[in-house]
Image (cartoon, rainbow, N blue to C red; front, side):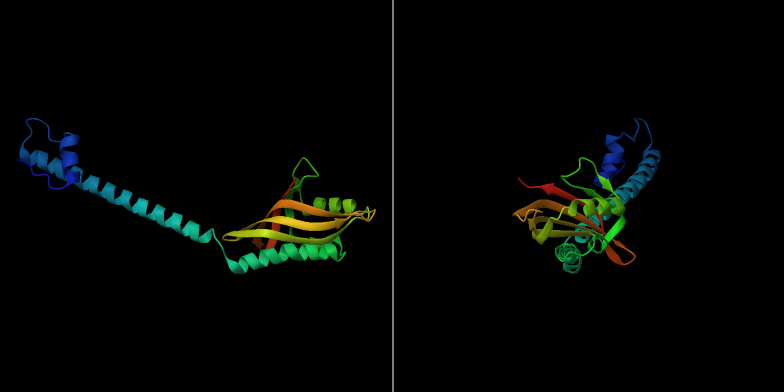
Length: 196
């Protein structure tokens, strides 16, 4: 009688009925041994694949996390932009850390704004009315790093003065996406959502 010693061998020999009625023990044994070896190779490959997928998930979580150095760099870029605006510097200076293919969603326009050039022209036009930013900063900042991409989310808090001298708060829920381009973190996308 054929001996199937491992659980896999039992599965291959009995569940799949590899031992046909009337087959000799030696022919059934040879077939069972061949099927068992193939099954064991399959199980080893499957086990290896599961282990590799688990490792990739763990590595992905390690890469998609907090990096204090990157967080400080991208938050400093946002603050430098606001400081340049408060200081009355040119729009070109304010957008120095912005990529040419920058995209933006904001509450003033119902469409995505494509390109640094378009965003610069719109910013120059809207700021020509005499209104001015007096202060801008972020609260509840979080930076998630994914290799050469960093996502900064925060609550924007600021103060603006309109052309008539009226001072009012400026607030938004904001997301900025930075990418390392030519060794420098550059702003490639932003979404500024109003807060009621």
